[in-house]
Amino acid sequence: MLNILIVARKEVQEGLRNRWVLATTLLLAALALTLTFLGSAPTGTVGVRALDVVIVSLASLTIFLLPLIALLISHDAVVGEMERGTMLLLLSYPIGRWQVLLGKFVGHLAILAFATLIGYGAAALALALTGATIDRESWVAFAAMIGSSILLGAVFIALGYLVSALVRQRGTAAGIAVGLWLVFVLLYDMALLGALVIDQGQTISGGVLSALLLLNPTDAYRVFNLSGSSSLSAISGMAGTARNSLGNEALLATLALWVLVPLSLSALAFSRREL
Amino acid sequence: MTPVVHVDRVVKRFGAVEAVRTVSFDLMGGETIALVGHNGAGKTTLMKLIIGLIRPTSGQLRLLGEDPAAGQFAGRQRLGYLPENVSFNAALTGRETLAFYARLKRESAATVGPLLERVGLEQAADRRVGTYSKGMRQRLGLAQALLGSPQVLLLDEPTTGLDPALRQSFYDILEDLRRGGSCVLLSSHALTELEERAGRVIIMNRGLKVADGSVQDLRGIAELPTRIRLRTREQEIEAAQQWFAGTPCHAINSHTLEISVAQDRKIEVLRRASSVGAPVVDIDVAPPNLDDLYAHFLQDREGASC
Image (tube, rainbow over the protein chains, first blue to last red):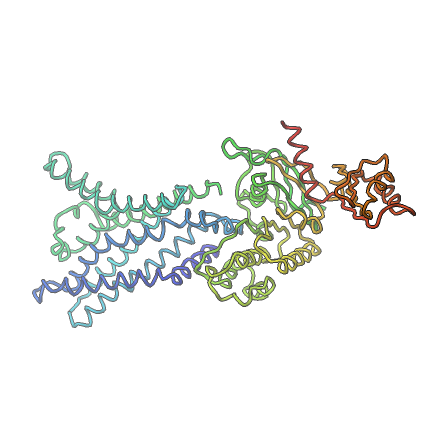
């Protein structure tokens, strides 16, 4: 346990030193603030709760950005250290390979969580300072959005490790990471949409659609956040989608599984790797 | 006394390549052993096997009494390793890097400062490792290998990139550790440098152990001749050749004669060269050095296997 924390601490230290933490936090804060104020313009003062609009826009931002950031920091974790030769020395110490991997995971997740919390938190804070009235339900939904965003980041950190533990070269890892991002963030939904249009509701039932949404962590995240409450689903246009068949617990469990399975597989791949 | 490192008929194959072929040896505490061989002779692979970074294809290894690849790490607590071409994360400072490794070995942070001083890095301790020269990185590598006064030190080409002054202090540090009962295994290409320091030499060639013993032992086994060079006055080279008639000798130039003699005839030749009336003004004696021994054992092996 101590070894994991030692490695995690070093990852955070490195992240602070090479400005990863700063860059990610600033990027997320800047985009979140922009969306908050541009996004609230069209709604004006009419009825809609201001923070709910922010949640919807930030959730969409998360789906594009957080997987990308997570893959960027994680795809290099194993193969990069091997190529630079630092892994050889580290593994000659009294530390297990799974501890190295888990330590890196904790460290990388801490960086991502910090950036998300501060970046998005800044947006909510700014909104509150403008005097918008925000009720308790909105705050809860906002907290859930941040929590699930971090969970989505964890999914892609784990996927990045899996790639990193399997390939021989850093370039390959980067290529596959970009491919993963394209598939999960863009192509999968496009293909799903295309299939639905062609199918015209003939064979793809609501149950199948729910299952298909769970097969992509970004979709599980989307459903979780954009249809979390009646007011949210109204704004996001997600009213009446997969909501009825997928409970919040199932969605979160899916995301957790999307973290655990790739992480375990990457630990397995790493433990079998020859140095 | 039980060996700190026990290698028993170890074979390591990478695909079709046999990197280590049925090698056995025991290393004791208080020994300095030189591991000598070409690139690709299996030195680095052997070290990785001893640490447990890779598993042997067959055979057994013990490091401080435990199987190094079995995931028991008590042995590694007492192990120092300096890999060939050591590298560190460029973003952290030397002090932070060493503190990280100290934590992994459960050493107190107070050991970091003195250790940096010992390898001559106290000035650069708070600079990023990315700004270090090759020699400085090597020194940092050495510092981390010395953490926690290790019982077994494995050093892969440790002196590359070190200047002569530092090299000397480096060997002094190793000698201190050896006196304290540690086992020091180092590989190097700088054979003449190892000759004076290593009590024992293991010569590897293409994954096979071809020789193992003290430099003195190996000289005995190899039966390499000692070279004696005699300087004569100008024009007296022929007189000198006649003086040593019956001993194989050849003139190198107009005033230098080289005689190669077996160990047991060395004194006889020297007496003759220094006796009254010998046409000799100077004598140089060169026993076979580690380079010669190394070349001899490699040739030997090559001749045998081809």
